[in-house]
Length: 268
Image 1: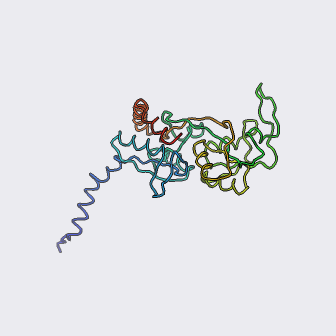
Image 2: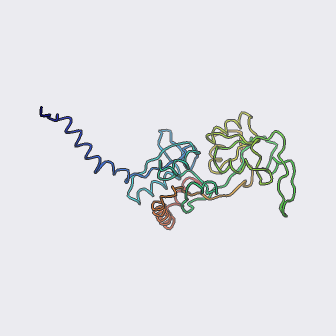
Image 3: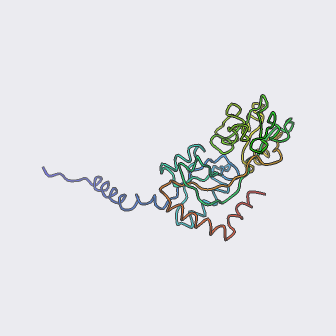
């Protein structure tokens, strides 16, 4: 018997063909950015649930210049590099610092902003500088470095950030040792434990630190820098074409003063 296709079947077939030649190409018009939206003022969610912040505005301009639509995926910070490396996301932008470990998995764009790691403590803390956390100092290769960490010190960090990496290192490298570091999914979680007395201090980037201190009475930022670093955007190793395009746009935006305008909008 001769089979006759139903009207519905015909529509389904035509829709599939259309997808092959049109809709499936839509991914080329979308720039998927992975971030961790708990890092104000670089990325966070407004009361209405919209993504906002320095990285969000810069990424939006980048997408516009490339003729693409920005799609933001909010994930755990530690999942950004692996997700970008696997091709799940086009790029990662989350106040991220270039490190040797990360360079093993991804490439990085040119720098677009500078970050400083600082120390948050309670206002009545006995510690007046991060040097006070160490039990003493010694000289190694002509440089004075910590000899050990005072008993009872507990440092809170956001997991997989450079604050985590630096703090978890040995005292001789100005760290506190793995045993004295507590990791959290977000800086906000670490600050909460600091307020309740479970931590001695929280080490995090300066701008988020200022936002957390402003929102939480009884906390302060110690004078001085724990570390100074540059922020960049990460890309899969085999996605140099996109990285080169983004670098071109970053230079344009920098030369036009637009990146500085965005930084000045959020950082006073």
